[in-house]
Image (cartoon, rainbow, N blue to C red; front, side, top):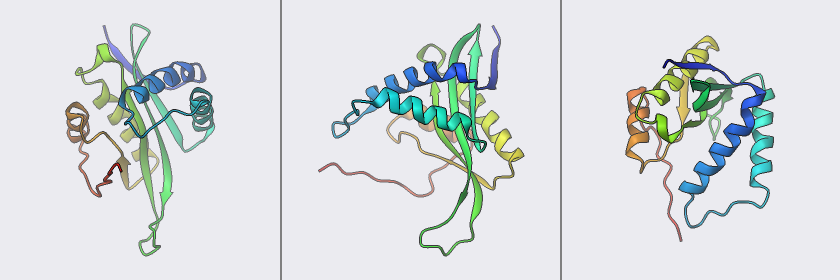
Length: 157
């Protein structure tokens, strides 16, 4: 069975929403509470991203089953305070691989497809956020050439 990567379609949004909400529920910390309208808010966010021209999404499929997805965008970055020249960067907002397809290179293929599209959009760098406590996630991003730059630390009170 051949795995294929394609651009996302509007018909994919409901399945992406469902998978992402389920994932968010499984990784939420004790200080995080879902909004009462979380599913509607997620669908609205996905719909806006789908319509935006600097936004992009890719679906990994095998036998018509969605194995995973990646959502990204291209944006102009400016430093705060504004002391560094603005630059065009790629931002990977979400990478998800369904449980039965994990550890088969699906995430890496989705990342490579997004990087290819970002090169074509003339970005200078690509950034993402991933779970620092998830060893499998760290390995996927490291294999794709990502390394920590600035650490976003968190302390619960």
